[in-house]
Image 1: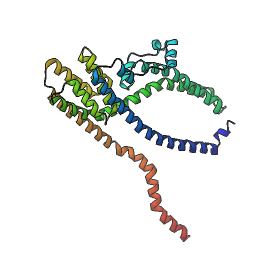
Image 2: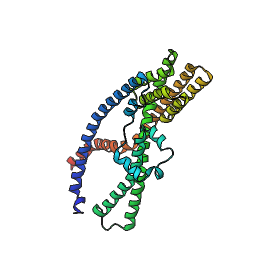
Image 3: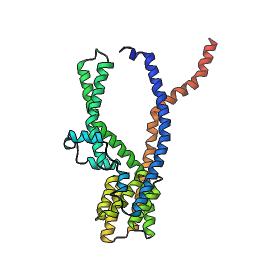
Image 4: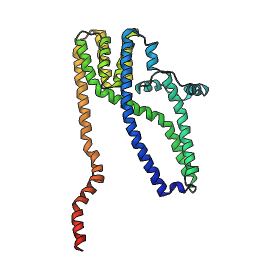
Length: 318
């Protein structure tokens, strides 16, 4: 039975089934992503209305942005005291930068940090002792199991890093436009709270993540006693250099009375220049990346098209 699993015809059938399933999954994810985008945008807009009605962050809006943790995850974390030996000092900040807020996010992170190494190790053991070759050396199997255990330890952190990078990329692309809108609102005479609320409403079509951060900043400006704390929290959650610069400008303008419009105009211009430089850098890196695919896929086809007529004529002459 072990060798039948590695039969070429069986493997071809499995690969064909996986390819067809992946195609249908990608089509389904495409439509699901559109629905998810619409739902998230509707959720953000509804949060703006709740904030506008008057500081309901501690009851209704907090329930919308923070869901309750799963009971079994919470039970496992509390029973084995995972927060004492798996938690890190910056775990909450990293979760906030990835868009996961509240105690349920920390509980889920601790749960998966404890479960994923065990799951990876069990999968490696099952592969080597059920599906693998029985003639494999013990040291090879042990090394692979240790590697699987290490991969399980790093998997939650890698997932968190990838989610954070994608989220920051979305916010980074929309942040210059958000600064332009904020500049217009400030020069029109709006307060910072009203400007944040308006920018959050308008920028949601470009970046839902940035709209959510503006919504939370608006809420924190409404109920926190120190406005500087709300500004610093906004910069920490986004993790963008431009956001930190804007926060510095807002704090200095509030503390020393410096003109806010000119500082925001300079910051917006610098943010647009940074976005343009990033696009130029990506465009400059494209030709080297295309070299290998062109050699592998285009060059053989081109040689076939050029040499095929001559080869056919030679065959007919013989």
